[in-house]
Length: 520
Ligand SMILES: Nc1nc2c(c(=O)[nH]1)N[C@H]1C(S)=C(S)[C@@H](COP(=O)(O)O)O[C@H]1N2
Ligand SMILES: [Mo]
Image 1 (cartoon, rainbow, N blue to C red):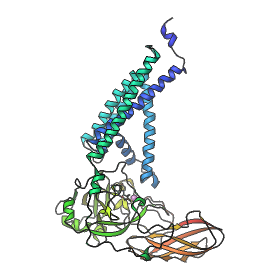
Image 2 (image 1 turned 90 degrees about the horizontal axis):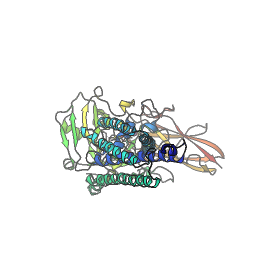
Image 3 (image 1 turned 45 degrees about the vertical axis):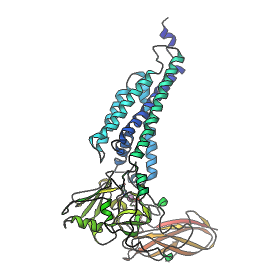
Image 4 (image 1 turned 45 degrees about the horizontal axis):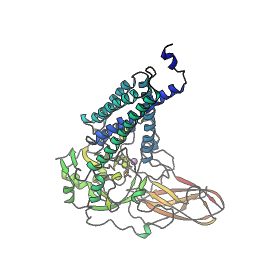
């Protein structure tokens, strides 16, 4: 009787199962090393060239245009976490399969090569890519193939019988070594990444210039003190964040340059030394995202310190037939802003400070744009490094390429903050309060409706400016039962906020916010 008949296992024998398991472990470890080694090499090229980032960013950019769901399309912070988790799960499953196949027959290697080729192609498509962007993927895949072979060679074979103990030891040793190497490369990449471009330390050292005059103080009459009402100035940690960046750009103030070019008399290049020669201004402005749903939280007000954009553009000499300011972020994200909005005298700023401190990194450190009256996707470029003067019939930008409106003026909106949704309140006098905004036009009046009763005028808080939101309150003599509260605002042009419910895509949501409340 030959040995193989003794060993040849049945389909579901523990030996076979262990083989598959070990193949899967080999695949997972190899994948970890692909990502770790790729990450490490990317530190020396560009953080945006790491294979994991390349795959994630490619997915973000190619989310189908037909997906109208703003929550999926705007890639706020939660969406990013969801993306990372789903990507990791898909990769882990794929890696386990690759490892199992490699156990059987060396199919894992060609699969890794194929995957590497595709990732390298994606890397070259990144907006800031150079040919060097393929290097992290190539290095990662090479390390991964070696690791896969080593660990698989360390697993017991079905054909060459060895003592079970010996193969087990060999498998464990190679597996643990490759695992340690993967952890080591990731840690080294993180440490080097933080120390080579230490943007956190750079921001901590950054000295904010003093504005000629501080922003007008917010008078108490503009900010009623009511528990649960949105504060007039949004603290940084409560300020919404929306961007496509899977990895925050690490741009130090020393490396920052702003190029102003295109349909201009001359090209201007600015750095922080140049900026510091200029006079800074400070303004309180409300920023709003086009993805905000009726009653949503994607709006915030901050004290912004910066430089009037119109002055910067004047230095370059804007040609009269231009109508678009195409701004670009260090990560390749682009925004097209109507030049008229930048030049008509409103507070369109190149911003470097937020609420008395340098811009938080997530909000665009070291510099971003803010143009009141326009949604963020057509005005508020973070990590801005390039301003091109051009025309709407020649250029388009990140979100307009994906079907969103070319021009994004902010629509009048109002929101009930108090009482909270589905709150139960005692019958009698109840304070209802909220915010309303219509930047550049200003809020003239706010009305509240209970169920189907006539609309009642609410009391607007003092108006800080037409570019900031306006708080409002209303005293309700609440009677027991379930009630629906509704709010609507009228802007200073006399236009009543649209009642028609429309989704954020393609030019901002409309509709009256309502809230159900139980009175006891
Ligand atoms: N570089 C970059 N800038 C960007 C974006 C982005 O994705 N990348 N998103 C824009 C959008 S859609 C909005 S609403 C604002 C949000 O600014 P915030 O995150 O500081 O609130 O930033 C704008 N600037
Ligand atoms: Mo946005």
